[in-house]
Length: 390
Image (cartoon, rainbow, N blue to C red; front, top):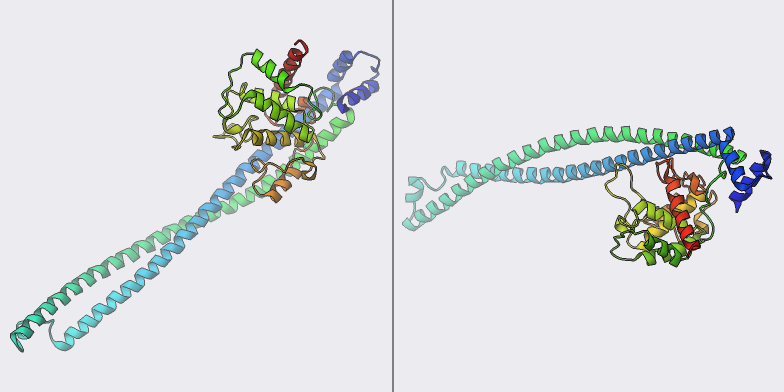
């Protein structure tokens, strides 16, 4: 009920406490200070989200280059080992050929000459000729192997030089990206500080809660009412592993666990998925999707997708939300697979408390569409109107 109290206090400050609620709202929305505070807040939050998105992009580029550098270093190590092996083999072949040449020099022949063949008995001559032929073939084979080893060592050396050159270029690219990440992080910090300052100014004059439905609180609709309205409007859901009725119940359960209005989150999912006609990978709220993203975040089950949505809504709504107060651990599929990091990312989310009402959504908060909040609120109000008439 905090939004209602805030509106009344602001109304009294403007001298309209005795007016009807609709008239109070109209005066609040038309007050220049409120209008300016809201505009400033939306712009600062939008700039902060854009800076955070750029930071994430540069950080991903840094990680990709680091992986490429690690791969280059692995290949260089393997190639260097191959080169050492080939060099040792080449040395062995060269040693064998030298020993063979020395033996031929000392014996004065290779066992294939006439004097070699005719000396001694006829059988000795034949044997010497056969041994000489075999030795000659071995010499030829070793000579070819030696030449092949030389060529392969030379090729490896050329490849190593190329790999080293690529490594140096990528290292330079990494150094540049590291500097960009640091600069972008500083920019994000500045943008977040400016957004928080604008948020505080908006709170002081009551602009933050001048209009809108709170994100936190108990649901007002039952699962049957949510599904009844859904079926009445003619949506064509495409769900392979669940039903709309099951999803409605999960939204109410997960929302109640974290004190987030699960029926409103269900309305958000309808906006995001076109009535569950496009909800791949159990992602019902557009998590991970962006203008340049090939796909959004993958969740193994419907409940996992809804839980991540509810937890992010809680973080947007409550500036004091912390992992210790969660009914369930932070989603490993959204925050981080490693529990300690997931808790850290949940607790330090930069936009924490920026959207306590649905009217604060949009302009970077969850979506860039400035009309986003109106779409979600509109769906929710239509659900409520249907439930009241049935």
